[in-house]
Structure formats: structure tokens, C-alpha cells
Length: 523
Image 1 (tube, rainbow, N blue to C red):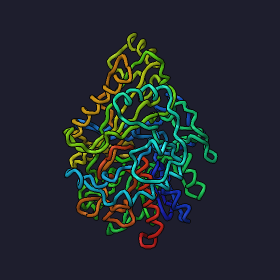
Image 2: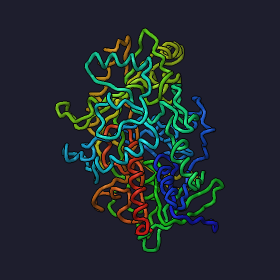
Image 3: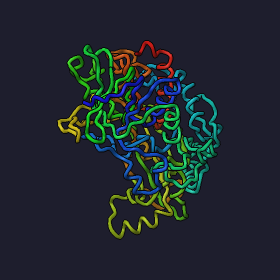
Image 4: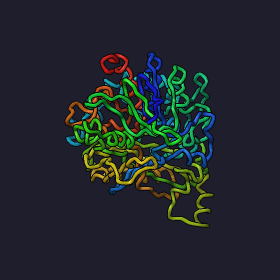
């Protein structure tokens, strides 16, 4: 191990949505902060609107071994470098509903959160003002109470207008999608130009990625970012009662160490439990912060599917935003007459390029050669798409463990098992059936589906009241080690049916306030 170990107040693993936010707030509060990012430096000036670039920034060099009847999707949900997956996220920022925080109480299955919507509401409001969300507060009839969107909604373009006909014909309400993308300039961040390249990052700063928001603030406040730092484990004192630092491997393959008063894991949802399990010691033989045996348990995804249609008129699908133009939560609440608990939301008219990760050609994997070429030419001007995102239930057996296979640094890779619950299968079927009716009602001449379009990864270090039934408390503070925190979607006891970035940001801001107030007791 290097003798040139750094010492700091707070070390954060990961420079994504949560790590950047926590770093900004604690650095602004006067703490010395070091952020360890496993991937290379990616400043905003290095983000390029191209399909080749988009593919380069997705994925991870340490992919988990996935298995089960509904394996977790890795490539789309991950990134490698500064900003993490938030570097190229789709900016669909929705609030969880009050009933999501008490899911077991309302449905009799799953888990409850150790906090309620009102605990998180002021943090949603503060984050919303920080990053700038564009939306239509009057048309949004579904979101729980909160401050109005600070920016007007982004426009609904040709593809969204075409799809909206189908919703209108079936009497299903829609609204412009609220997104963390600027419809007007904010400071040195430009307004969105609607070119549909969110998936490749946003060099003009319209998309609220870390490079344009919290990471920029963190660095300005004195936080230090260390790239190419592959974290191996969290270090503890001899009794395992207190975390003392983090060990990592640098770009040259040398082991390094950062000692700190407080440690926060803000890595990818699969990496957080992997780090904890790899931090096993004599005091913690089954992994750090794992007295409950639940580190790695309750891995979840958002159950999803996609519906596509071809239209005679041009729909200009290459324009817009990767997160879509119209949105509906008309089917969000549990309705037991449908045969499943939980619900789903609709995201419609996402921008599509010919052959990127969510590209036009990828929707027809049954076509090859000339038929695919002919389809792609027609679809590039006439396609419309619709996706739904639904609940997945927390199942303890869906979990992360350590594999016998190792990465290039000699550390065990994660093994991720995720089997689809019967509830999720029924939900997916209902979404696909209704989605096809919507597309047909919009006037599509041809309709097809992509059944498995699961999105996001959640769980693995769930929060709760009891150390016996959870890994952390409501602030992400581990029950076993008071100065060790977990950030992000790893904490979610349930999935809700909304994209998680807004919620993980609000949770992190709440944790930042908690750390600032209780710093002496933590260290």
C-alpha cells in the first residue's frame, strides 16, 4: 500500500448524482472532501453527440455475472467515468408518491420505508430549484404536493403530438414530461436545443448532469476529484466499530489509501454492496455493515416494456429528448382488479437515432440484411415509441453475492441474481396490452413490442428502522458503523414506478443536512 496516503474529512466513492451532490454540500459547509471515481476524467468539453461516443460511455469494465429469469440490465444503466450514469441519464425526474413509502402498509406485500413523503418533500423542492426542472405544473395532475416547476415545460414535438392522439382517443390524460433539462437558460447553462442526444451526455449543460450542476459546485468549493481510482474496500479499526478510510487501486495499478472521518459509498447500485462484501474482516467476516445478512439482498429493477408503431406521416423521431415528450401516471396506483399490486407510468415519444443503444434498428431484432435496411430507412422518419415503467417487488433472494471470478485488480466480481416475481409478469402483460391499444388508437399502421425493457437497478443495501431487517437508517447511515454511509438507489426498500434520480438526489440532500448537523458525533 502507498505510504502517500491522503487524509480528509469525507471520502466519497463515486462522482455520479449522489456523490457529486454530497460533495458539493459538505465542501460548501467547510469540510475537506475527496471523491474517488473509478473511471476516467470526462469533462463537459469531452462529451460528444454521436452514437460511437454514446456507446463508449456506457457499461463498466467490472460487469457483474447476471442470472435469473429476468436478469438485471447492466449496459444501459451504467457508465464509466466522471459523472457516473448521471452523465448520460434521461432526466425524467418524478417524485415517489406517498403510498410508495408505505407500500407494505397499503398492499400487504413488499417493504415500508423508514420515512414518508413529507420527510422528503422539502428536499425534492430544494433539488428541483438547484438543478432546474422544466414541466407544466397545471397539466401534471399526478405528482404529490410540492413547489411548482421552476421552468416551463419543454415542447411536445411531432412524435409526441402523434402519440398523444392515441391517449386522447382512449380518454387517458397526459402532460409534457417534467425533466431536469432546461427549457430556458440558467446561469452559464444553455437551454435545450432538442436534438435528442441526451444519451451521449450534454456538452451545453442543458441536461442536469453532474458536470453541469453539483460536481461543478463541489470542485469550486474545494473538493478534490481523483479519477481512475478503483475502490477495493472500506477500512476499519481493529474492532470494526469505525470506518477509517478507503483503499483503492490507481491508474498505474498501485494500491492507495484515503483516510477520513466519514466514508460515503455513492457508487452504482451493484457496486455499493460489492464493496461492502469485499470489505470483510475478522470483525466483519460476512462483509461490512452486514450484521443483518442483507447486504446485497432485495435487488430490484423497474419492470418495463416498449411499444412501437409506424405511421404514414412523418414523425421526426430523431428530435426531442431521450426521456420522451409526454408522460402519464393514469395507471400508477394499485388497482387489484387488474390482478397485481403496484402500477406503472407511461413515457412517450423518446428521441431515437438509427442505431444507438435505444435505436430504431434495435427494435426489430428479427430483421437482417436488406429487410432491416429498408425498415430502418422508413422508420427513421415514421416511427413512434412508448415505454412503461412499473413496480418490481422486493424479494430477498434477488441479491448480489461475490463470484469466484475476479476483475483485473484481483477482486471478486459481483454475481447478480434476479428472478421475475409473478406480480411483475402480470404487470408487464397489462402494460404491453394497453400500450398496443394506445398506439393503434393513434393511427399506427404497424405495431410491435419489445417485452423486456426493464430499467434502473435498485436495492442491495436497503434502509429501515431495525438493524435486523435493514442495512442503514433513513439517512443511509449503516446500523453497524456510525461513520459509514450508503447513497443512491441501493437504499430503496421498494421501487415505486418512477425513475429514481430525483428521489436519490433528495435523499442525498437530506443526508448532507444530517451529516452537517451531526458531524462531531459521526467522527
